[in-house]
View 1 (tube, rainbow, N blue to C red):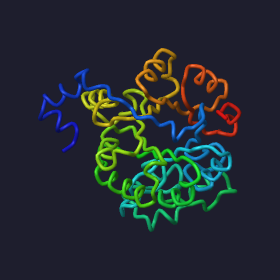
View 2: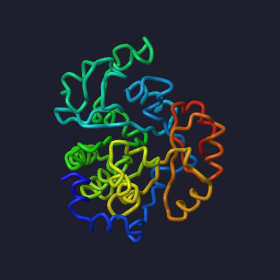
View 3: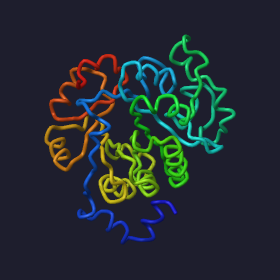
View 4: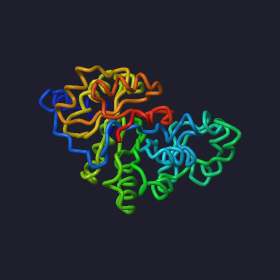
Length: 287
């Protein structure tokens, strides 16, 4: 049943989800994964330095000695693949949706040429491949893509099983715009640190007003139970940052490509920035 159907059929559910008393919990300490502060984290690897979400971009981040973020979703044959867009046209120059394309076809696509001829032939990687290659070396922020048609349980099953098989459940963070996806991960392995990504109602552009209202209130309630907040840097204000940190959250902001803006955010108390150009920011990082 979709969220919309559940709300329509059960007004009590809507009331329960919107009750202020459901809004806060106690985020867990994540300092073991972030021994120094502030933190510079590469966006889609190091998107400004190499083709986004490719092994080349992840290697660039690892060479800089920083954690990085990536995007993942399930393709038609059930594998978790590393790519940001639902559609293939922007990166691969071909029509089609990732969710409707089998891995055997995705593996033949070139997602490097759009960035530079130097990266022609760069393939879409499997999440398992990235984790196997770099998971033991650097912290990886796994952003799980989820839309209204995503089977959150299936995605969470696939992801959690992969992390457990590789003994990385305590060495990554899992983040998403969807609190329902984060809930599914929590129910399967509550030890995995979770981060809620948000920027406001625009993040839920395909949802109705009621769904947007429900989802906005789910951000911090007992379903997702995030340990970290991953917010649009334009929404970061000193007072808000102070309030969230008093509640125990570690705060990361995205996507910050100006070192001066990063310095402002760190002065507010933000714990880390996610950037396309980590090479510009490394001088601002902690020891």
